[in-house]
Image 1 (tube, one colour):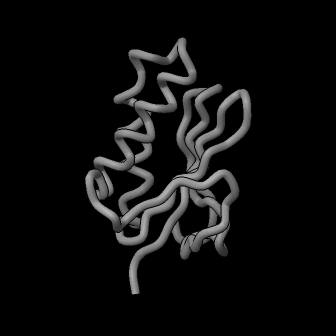
Image 2 (spheres, rainbow, N blue to C red):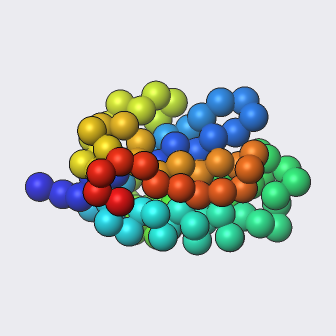
Length: 104
């Protein structure tokens, strides 16, 4: 059970992956909201990345909680929307969010 989905957060130095266990349906909107939350730090990628991650954790309901989300350096979690590959892309270089896969 669950609604599992991953987002790839692309930076100039590589990618970080965010996983949500119960909020997959909402991850595209959460991703766009996170990017909007970070716009004040657009010129500082490390701060922008931290703001995006913080917003995703908060939106997923997993802040101060042992459940609901995780961070990875490799995409090694389930994504029911794109055959276990990230179906949401947050690109901090182009400042865009996109979805891929069959069930967007």
